[in-house]
Image (tube, rainbow, N blue to C red):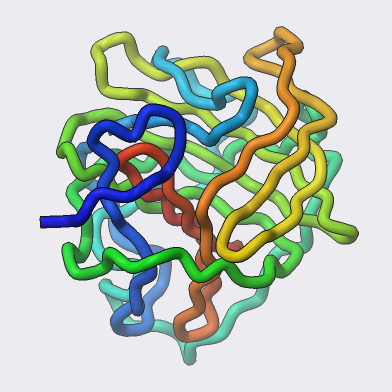
Length: 233
């Protein structure tokens, strides 16, 4: 059983799900199963919600995954040719359209993977959510594309289905700057729009880490009872 740990806001059932060593090399993780939506970060304005609409941007790639990012078919020499970051992607706050379909919530991949988050240095690039773990096993999904550019600028588009029956929530757009502090990622927003409506948002702090395996780079972070994996394009 996973030990409980802090993520943010009301952590009544938050599980400790953290630092994992990825297994074998592979291409994109295989498609995922179902699981929960969970809280966003400790932002003044939450980026989660509930309503099954697709993002204002189009889906351009494959679905989320169920299995360790290291599982799956053979790789092509463990090489990575990252896509350059684009901080003016045409959506609100300069966000890019979603790069993948929503990752369905699934059970925690590795119950022994429950240490602290290690932080790490973000390489400029585009990161798409590919795995959404949830300790409760509830249904729902998480969809996100996070772009990190030069000078610590970022954009983020996100949509969450908490699994409560109301479908996916609003498509939330954020941009601003990031800084890091001992395993915590601090996002300071200068633009925040939910669907087409501007909202108030100041900062958000989440535990995070950068993981690398066979030339692939993953950014993963925790929220209340969940853990999200994003893979660098």
